[in-house]
Structures are given as C-alpha cells and as structure tokens.
Image 1 (cartoon, rainbow, N blue to C red):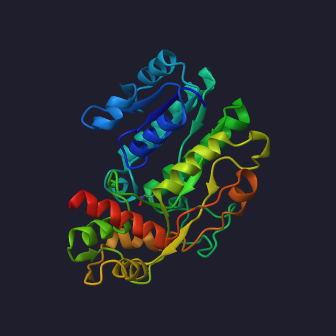
Image 2: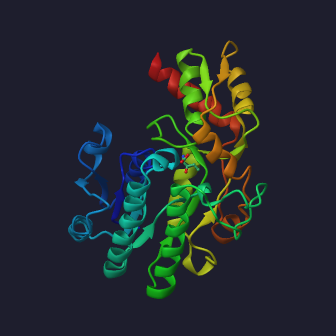
Image 3: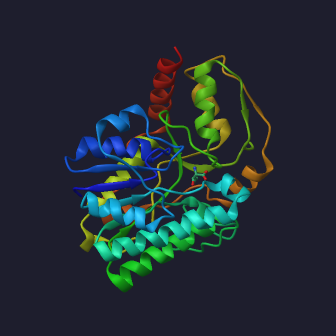
Amino acid sequence: MENVLIIGSTGQIGSELTMKLRGNYKGNIVAGYIPGAEPNYEIKESGPCEVVDITNAGQIAQVVDKYKIDTIYNLAALLSAVAESKPQLAWKIGIGGLCNVLEISREKKCALFTPSSIGVFGLNTPKDKTPQDTICRPKTMYGVTKVTGELLSDYYHTRFGVDTRSVRFPGLISYVTPPGGGTTDYAVDIYYSAAKGEKFVCPIAKGTFMDMMYMPDALRAAIEIMEADPTKLEHRNSFNIASLSFDPEIIFNEIKRYVPDFEMEYCVDPLRQSIAESWPNSLDDTCAREEWGWKPEYDLDAMTNDMLTKLKERFA
Ligand code: VAH
C-alpha cells in the first residue's frame, strides 16, 4: 500500500484507521468524508481530505486519479440497528456504494477492503465457534448487505481479478469516536457511563453473548490483511476474526474491578435484543490465523484498563 483512500474516514473505524495509516505509510492517505460529517482537527491537519460520497462514482474516480490511489478502504455503511429503520438507504450505501468502488477498483486496478460483520450470520447458523464457511441467512438488512457485499467482492476477484479482501468484524469497542447505531454499541456506552460515574442502563439482556474486539486489534487486522501475501489467501471475503466474547454481566463485573461503586440496570431494547440473539456467541477464526497470521493482542482486562484510563482522562 502507498496511496490509500479511506471512504467513511470520520466514522468509528475510519477516524482511527486514517491516523494509523498516516503513521505507518508516507504516501497520500486521503480522508474521504461527506459534508456534514467533517473530519476532526487531527485528521484535517495531518493529511489530505476530500469530499467523497460512496454513492457518487464520478467523485470517487476523480479522487482516485488525483492521488494515484492504489488501495481503497470502503467503510461507508449504516450499522445494524439504524439500517433496520432505513433499509433502502442501507442498501443504497452498502450495495450501491460497493458497486461503485468495485467498478472503480476494476478500472483503476485498486485493491479494495470492505468490512463484513458477524451480522452475516442468522438464527440457523451454528452459534458457538461459528465456522468460516457456514450458513449465512441473516434477517436484518445490515446482514443482507454484508452477505451480498461478500458475494460481490468475491465475484469481482474471481471474474475480474480485483484484489478484494475483507474481515467479519465483531462489535468494536473504542474511546475515540462513538459508534453510530449498532447492536453492540452497549459495550462502548457502558465504559462511558462508568468513566462519568453514572449508572448504566443496559439495552441487551443478561446472558446475551456477542463477539467483541478492541479497536487497536481491529485496525491491525484491517491493515495486516491488506499487507498479506495474496498467494496464501484461500478465502478473501470474508474472514472470521475473533478476540473476545462476553455478555453484559461479564463486562459489568470486569468494570466493577476498576470502579467498585459502578451500577447497572437492564432496560432491554426489543430491536437490538432480537438482532443480538440472531448473531453468534463466538467465532472460529482458524482460517485467518492460518492464511495471514491473525492474532488478537487485547484481552478483556487490558481493554477495560485502557478504555477507562483514556475516558477518565477525557472526562477529568
Ligand atoms: C453493529 N457494531 O452493531 C456493528 C457491528 C457486529 C456489530 O456490525 O451493527
């Protein structure tokens, strides 16, 4: 990778991925954003920023030409809960947008990363140690866009030789940019409540396990897969990657080790709960480990310690 375009550079993943890529690479690391979601000061001041709407193919092509982009990170998407309230828009961005970047990647010989998600799995998928190759019949529009995205990305690789790669992200936890409307957002919000000394009202029921990952591990996965030796990849779109799996009780008790007076009560959100129940309890990520050396670095204790330290500094 030398010149990279991040579409969706102001989102939960994009805001941190942009800065990490700018730290790792000396080429043009271009922050693509849409009006109304301007980059923060750090992103604005540390490299090129351009208006890039994933639904505007001409705009994407013009930026790819201007900066001689060789790799595109397509991070534009509506997350699971929001996508259920705006399914047509979720499809327009998730798939209409993906078709634009797939065509541009084909024409201009760019490598393309489009994240998938544990949202591709559904109620009839094996829930524990979910296999790499298994049933993907999601009941959410978010899941439908992610399964379709995987199939389209594999098709463009097989049919046109486009270098498409992807990982199935679990719920991502970070302290930099809050997530925007996902089912796993509770695992971020709980840390904010604890850092502010507030009681947490949990929208996900006790005993509901989901795969989760600390953002530094997720960013490393997004970069390492694009740096991987393509001759070793048997899969491409998209790899299971795993790190943590917990329910609200486990993360609450882990936080209480650092904040003894922390309190939580449950007020289950039916939509998010139904989505969470359709997702796996844990993933098998053997293929990612064998084909490109994936390995998580943060356990629950290390993540909790880092999240609370950074958030308490911010709210001090
Ligand atoms: C969501 N955070 O909850 C996202 C993610 C696996 C979860 O896709 O929609």
